[in-house]
Length: 250
Image (cartoon, rainbow, N blue to C red):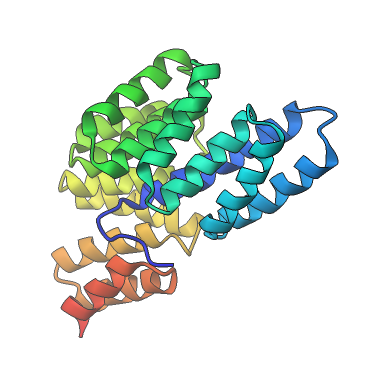
Protein backbone atom coordinates (compact mmCIF):
# COMPACT_ATOMS: atom_id res chain seq x y z
CA UNK A 1 0.00 0.00 0.00
CA UNK A 2 1.55 3.29 -1.08
CA UNK A 3 1.68 6.21 1.27
CA UNK A 4 1.28 9.84 0.29
CA UNK A 5 4.81 11.25 0.02
CA UNK A 6 3.70 14.45 1.69
CA UNK A 7 2.69 12.66 4.89
CA UNK A 8 5.23 12.49 7.70
CA UNK A 9 6.31 8.97 8.60
CA UNK A 10 5.22 9.64 12.17
CA UNK A 11 1.56 9.50 11.10
CA UNK A 12 1.90 5.82 10.29
CA UNK A 13 3.98 5.18 13.39
CA UNK A 14 1.61 7.10 15.63
CA UNK A 15 -1.42 5.29 14.31
CA UNK A 16 0.13 1.85 14.87
CA UNK A 17 1.33 2.68 18.39
CA UNK A 18 -1.95 4.28 19.32
CA UNK A 19 -3.95 1.36 17.95
CA UNK A 20 -1.91 -0.97 20.16
CA UNK A 21 -2.39 1.18 23.25
CA UNK A 22 -6.12 1.71 22.84
CA UNK A 23 -6.77 -1.88 21.80
CA UNK A 24 -5.20 -3.34 24.92
CA UNK A 25 -6.88 -0.73 27.12
CA UNK A 26 -10.30 -1.71 25.91
CA UNK A 27 -9.60 -5.44 25.82
CA UNK A 28 -8.59 -5.36 29.48
CA UNK A 29 -11.21 -2.91 30.66
CA UNK A 30 -14.35 -4.54 29.29
CA UNK A 31 -15.49 -7.50 31.34
CA UNK A 32 -18.09 -10.09 30.33
CA UNK A 33 -18.05 -8.82 26.76
CA UNK A 34 -20.25 -10.84 24.47
CA UNK A 35 -18.32 -13.46 22.53
CA UNK A 36 -19.68 -12.20 19.21
CA UNK A 37 -18.41 -8.67 19.78
CA UNK A 38 -15.06 -9.96 21.03
CA UNK A 39 -14.57 -11.99 17.86
CA UNK A 40 -15.60 -9.09 15.66
CA UNK A 41 -13.25 -6.76 17.52
CA UNK A 42 -10.33 -9.13 17.00
CA UNK A 43 -11.11 -9.51 13.29
CA UNK A 44 -11.45 -5.75 12.81
CA UNK A 45 -8.18 -5.07 14.62
CA UNK A 46 -6.36 -7.46 12.31
CA UNK A 47 -7.83 -5.77 9.24
CA UNK A 48 -6.96 -2.34 10.61
CA UNK A 49 -3.30 -3.13 11.34
CA UNK A 50 -2.79 -4.74 7.92
CA UNK A 51 -4.24 -1.78 6.04
CA UNK A 52 -7.50 -3.45 4.98
CA UNK A 53 -9.39 -0.35 6.03
CA UNK A 54 -12.58 -0.95 4.04
CA UNK A 55 -13.01 -4.39 5.62
CA UNK A 56 -12.27 -2.95 9.06
CA UNK A 57 -14.99 -0.31 8.62
CA UNK A 58 -17.54 -2.99 7.72
CA UNK A 59 -16.72 -5.00 10.83
CA UNK A 60 -16.85 -1.96 13.10
CA UNK A 61 -20.21 -1.13 11.54
CA UNK A 62 -21.40 -4.58 12.62
CA UNK A 63 -20.15 -3.96 16.17
CA UNK A 64 -21.95 -0.61 16.29
CA UNK A 65 -25.17 -2.26 15.13
CA UNK A 66 -24.95 -4.41 18.27
CA UNK A 67 -23.95 -1.50 20.50
CA UNK A 68 -24.20 1.98 19.01
CA UNK A 69 -22.39 3.47 22.01
CA UNK A 70 -19.27 1.29 21.72
CA UNK A 71 -16.64 4.04 21.95
CA UNK A 72 -13.75 1.76 20.96
CA UNK A 73 -15.53 0.85 17.73
CA UNK A 74 -16.02 4.53 16.91
CA UNK A 75 -12.37 5.21 17.71
CA UNK A 76 -11.04 2.38 15.56
CA UNK A 77 -13.48 3.04 12.75
CA UNK A 78 -12.23 6.62 12.76
CA UNK A 79 -8.70 5.33 12.23
CA UNK A 80 -9.90 3.12 9.39
CA UNK A 81 -11.69 6.05 7.75
CA UNK A 82 -8.52 8.11 8.14
CA UNK A 83 -6.57 5.36 6.40
CA UNK A 84 -9.09 5.56 3.55
CA UNK A 85 -8.66 9.37 3.42
CA UNK A 86 -12.29 9.80 4.43
CA UNK A 87 -11.44 12.62 6.80
CA UNK A 88 -14.96 13.95 7.57
CA UNK A 89 -16.10 10.46 8.57
CA UNK A 90 -13.00 9.99 10.74
CA UNK A 91 -13.57 13.34 12.42
CA UNK A 92 -17.18 12.43 13.16
CA UNK A 93 -16.16 9.17 14.83
CA UNK A 94 -13.46 10.77 16.99
CA UNK A 95 -15.81 13.55 18.04
CA UNK A 96 -18.49 10.96 18.87
CA UNK A 97 -16.11 9.44 21.42
CA UNK A 98 -15.42 12.87 22.90
CA UNK A 99 -19.15 13.59 23.24
CA UNK A 100 -19.36 10.75 25.75
CA UNK A 101 -15.83 11.06 27.17
CA UNK A 102 -14.62 14.69 26.81
CA UNK A 103 -11.29 13.99 28.52
CA UNK A 104 -10.42 10.82 26.60
CA UNK A 105 -6.79 11.59 25.77
CA UNK A 106 -6.52 8.87 23.12
CA UNK A 107 -9.37 10.37 21.11
CA UNK A 108 -8.00 13.91 21.48
CA UNK A 109 -4.57 12.83 20.24
CA UNK A 110 -6.03 10.95 17.30
CA UNK A 111 -8.12 13.98 16.40
CA UNK A 112 -4.92 16.03 16.47
CA UNK A 113 -3.24 13.48 14.20
CA UNK A 114 -6.17 13.70 11.81
CA UNK A 115 -6.02 17.50 11.63
CA UNK A 116 -2.27 17.26 11.04
CA UNK A 117 -2.84 15.01 8.05
CA UNK A 118 -5.54 17.39 6.84
CA UNK A 119 -3.08 20.28 7.07
CA UNK A 120 -4.95 22.18 9.79
CA UNK A 121 -2.02 23.18 12.00
CA UNK A 122 -4.11 25.31 14.35
CA UNK A 123 -6.50 22.51 15.28
CA UNK A 124 -3.61 20.06 15.47
CA UNK A 125 -1.81 22.18 18.07
CA UNK A 126 -5.02 22.84 19.99
CA UNK A 127 -5.74 19.14 20.39
CA UNK A 128 -2.19 18.20 21.35
CA UNK A 129 -2.09 21.01 23.91
CA UNK A 130 -5.45 19.91 25.31
CA UNK A 131 -4.26 16.31 25.64
CA UNK A 132 -1.07 17.46 27.36
CA UNK A 133 -3.00 19.44 29.95
CA UNK A 134 -5.27 16.50 30.74
CA UNK A 135 -2.48 13.92 31.03
CA UNK A 136 0.99 15.52 31.31
CA UNK A 137 2.57 12.15 32.12
CA UNK A 138 1.48 10.55 28.85
CA UNK A 139 4.60 10.16 26.62
CA UNK A 140 2.48 9.93 23.47
CA UNK A 141 1.50 13.59 23.76
CA UNK A 142 5.02 15.08 23.51
CA UNK A 143 6.13 12.53 20.90
CA UNK A 144 3.29 13.58 18.61
CA UNK A 145 3.92 17.24 19.32
CA UNK A 146 7.58 16.71 18.47
CA UNK A 147 6.69 15.02 15.20
CA UNK A 148 4.30 17.87 14.43
CA UNK A 149 7.07 20.43 15.02
CA UNK A 150 9.47 18.42 12.84
CA UNK A 151 6.89 18.43 10.08
CA UNK A 152 6.64 22.21 10.54
CA UNK A 153 10.47 22.50 10.37
CA UNK A 154 10.69 23.78 13.95
CA UNK A 155 13.42 21.51 15.41
CA UNK A 156 14.07 23.55 18.56
CA UNK A 157 10.50 23.13 19.77
CA UNK A 158 10.61 19.48 18.72
CA UNK A 159 13.68 18.88 20.88
CA UNK A 160 11.93 20.42 23.90
CA UNK A 161 9.12 17.86 23.48
CA UNK A 162 11.53 14.99 22.85
CA UNK A 163 13.35 15.77 26.08
CA UNK A 164 10.02 15.39 27.89
CA UNK A 165 9.61 11.95 26.33
CA UNK A 166 13.16 11.07 27.34
CA UNK A 167 12.32 11.79 30.98
CA UNK A 168 9.02 9.90 30.86
CA UNK A 169 10.05 6.96 28.69
CA UNK A 170 13.76 6.91 27.74
CA UNK A 171 13.25 3.60 25.92
CA UNK A 172 10.39 4.90 23.77
CA UNK A 173 10.53 3.41 20.28
CA UNK A 174 11.90 5.75 17.57
CA UNK A 175 12.89 8.42 20.13
CA UNK A 176 16.49 8.33 18.90
CA UNK A 177 15.31 8.69 15.31
CA UNK A 178 13.24 11.75 16.16
CA UNK A 179 16.23 13.32 17.93
CA UNK A 180 18.37 12.57 14.88
CA UNK A 181 15.89 14.21 12.53
CA UNK A 182 15.63 17.25 14.79
CA UNK A 183 19.38 17.83 14.88
CA UNK A 184 19.54 17.18 11.13
CA UNK A 185 17.05 20.00 10.61
CA UNK A 186 19.21 22.21 12.83
CA UNK A 187 22.22 21.42 10.64
CA UNK A 188 24.07 19.75 13.54
CA UNK A 189 25.00 16.68 11.55
CA UNK A 190 27.50 15.09 13.95
CA UNK A 191 25.01 15.11 16.80
CA UNK A 192 22.29 13.85 14.48
CA UNK A 193 24.41 10.90 13.34
CA UNK A 194 25.06 9.85 16.94
CA UNK A 195 21.32 9.52 17.53
CA UNK A 196 20.67 7.89 14.15
CA UNK A 197 23.40 5.27 14.61
CA UNK A 198 21.90 4.38 17.99
CA UNK A 199 18.47 4.10 16.37
CA UNK A 200 19.79 1.78 13.65
CA UNK A 201 21.62 -0.36 16.21
CA UNK A 202 18.31 -0.86 18.01
CA UNK A 203 16.34 -1.43 14.82
CA UNK A 204 18.17 -2.06 11.57
CA UNK A 205 14.87 -1.73 9.71
CA UNK A 206 14.28 1.87 10.82
CA UNK A 207 13.67 3.42 7.39
CA UNK A 208 13.49 6.98 8.72
CA UNK A 209 16.86 6.64 10.45
CA UNK A 210 18.44 5.28 7.27
CA UNK A 211 16.83 7.97 5.13
CA UNK A 212 18.02 10.87 7.31
CA UNK A 213 21.46 9.26 7.62
CA UNK A 214 21.64 9.07 3.83
CA UNK A 215 20.73 12.74 3.53
CA UNK A 216 23.49 13.71 5.97
CA UNK A 217 26.07 11.55 4.20
CA UNK A 218 25.03 13.06 0.86
CA UNK A 219 25.43 16.57 2.32
CA UNK A 220 28.93 15.60 3.46
CA UNK A 221 29.84 14.37 -0.03
CA UNK A 222 29.88 10.67 0.87
CA UNK A 223 27.97 9.36 -2.14
CA UNK A 224 28.74 5.69 -1.52
CA UNK A 225 27.66 5.88 2.10
CA UNK A 226 24.55 7.89 1.22
CA UNK A 227 23.46 5.45 -1.48
CA UNK A 228 23.99 2.52 0.85
CA UNK A 229 21.79 4.21 3.46
CA UNK A 230 19.10 4.93 0.88
CA UNK A 231 19.20 1.29 -0.25
CA UNK A 232 18.70 0.16 3.34
CA UNK A 233 15.74 2.51 3.64
CA UNK A 234 14.24 1.17 0.40
CA UNK A 235 14.42 -2.34 1.86
CA UNK A 236 12.06 -1.01 4.52
CA UNK A 237 9.64 0.23 1.81
CA UNK A 238 10.51 3.93 1.99
CA UNK A 239 9.13 5.79 -1.03
CA UNK A 240 11.27 8.85 -0.24
CA UNK A 241 14.40 6.71 -0.21
CA UNK A 242 13.48 5.21 -3.58
CA UNK A 243 13.19 8.72 -5.01
CA UNK A 244 16.56 9.63 -3.51
CA UNK A 245 18.17 6.60 -5.12
CA UNK A 246 16.81 7.56 -8.52
CA UNK A 247 17.82 11.20 -8.27
CA UNK A 248 21.14 10.96 -6.47
CA UNK A 249 22.59 7.48 -6.88
CA UNK A 250 21.61 6.38 -10.38
